[in-house]
Amino acid sequence: MKFILEVNMVDGRLAEDAAGELGRILRYWGGNLHHYPLKPGDGSAIYDSEYREVGQWCIVATTET
Image 1: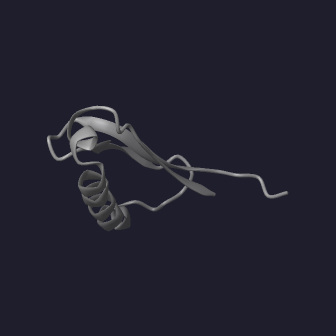
Image 2 (image 1 turned 90 degrees about the horizontal axis):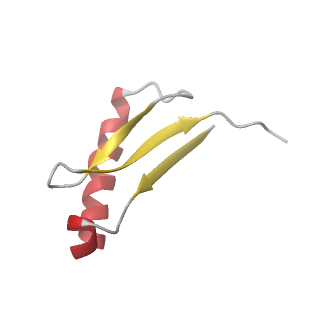
Image 3 (image 1 turned 90 degrees about the vertical axis):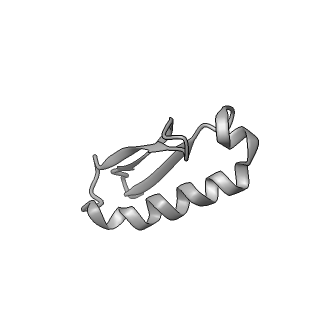
């Protein structure tokens, strides 16, 4: 499995204070992961501190080679 976190850093708070806003996003969503079984298909939208959707995270299945 893979955990994928994708955040658009072009607009809003992320463009103004990328390190601060990414840190907040990682703390919040990292702490929130215990609410999910973390199986392929799980995921959620990610919001900045102004409650604007700026990305998503998801769990995807991978094939071992």
